[in-house]
Amino acid sequence: MTYEAQQPQEKKILVELTLNEALSLTGTRFPQNHRLEVDAIHKIKKQLNEQLIDKRNSLQ
Image (tube, rainbow, N blue to C red):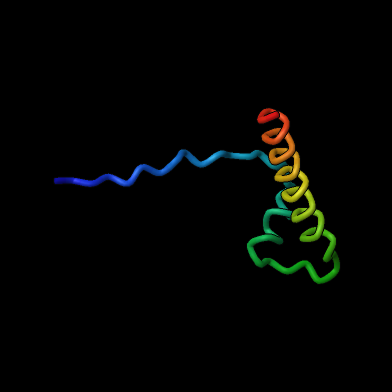
């Protein structure tokens, strides 16, 4: 007997980041501009919130 665990397909989100924002999230440091990492994280959180709100609205 074989058992295959079925994983639900991961939902994808799209977030537009500048090259430097993406680099800052990988650990590259920009000592003169800490805002790069902060802005990148903010963009990701904003997109996640929008996706969660859309999902909640479609369930109602």
